[in-house]
Image (tube, rainbow, N blue to C red; front, side, top):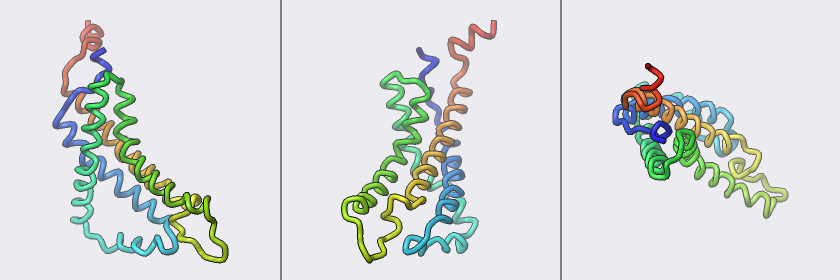
Length: 167
């Protein structure tokens, strides 16, 4: 049973911080390439960013994602769940509100379709960035959880199954 649990590691957590940011920033840049209309007014600002801004952004995004890794660790640990749940909780929980908000604002398109008026593009069910942004968050947090777990397992020492397999 203990081999299924997720070990704790401060070093793994510190290593996961830049991974989350380093995966998230390029994916969001890619997502922004699909924005259009009024939603695309800030896309050009990517070109004005300095390398220092990107390095700072990588760590800021990673720090923002850290509580989700800690939440996933404690939920898995307290409930006795497997490592797959760690990945699911760490990556899906931060993306769910972003997807939920996009769908909430698009709900008006279903309930009261506009006639003769151009709707705000981002409030549409067919607007691709509404789905790419949660996918970017999920991918970044999955990568951070993967790095965290690999380092935590490596630093935790041999488990019961590893001791038997070495004989």
